[in-house]
Image (cartoon, rainbow, N blue to C red; front, side, top):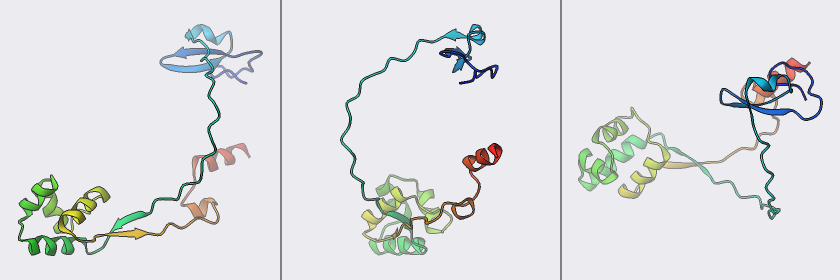
Length: 152
């Protein structure tokens, strides 16, 4: 292991030192720059039972015509935007922006709207499993890719 301050190879056990709020592994010489920390006590943890793979929860997105569906359902109930906002515990300006299409409600708010107006504005998204995780397929270069480039 190398000292995190000077970079020299540490012979024996490194010293845990706190310098400006950061805990570092240093050599004996660099340990004078900070406060020496105690080694964390090892806590015995019993082995956990193997986890069963959980089914992924489906993802949802708000449908494209959400604003007209919400407006029509609200008008069908005979509510004003202020009344709908009061029932949703939201501001009337939020309802105005949603119905005008300037704001897309998040999933939590969309579920509340669906429940109160008895409508459906959330669509289930089918998740695709990526076949190949090369940088070009997953959407760009990651820090791991850069680290691999630097090592070469």
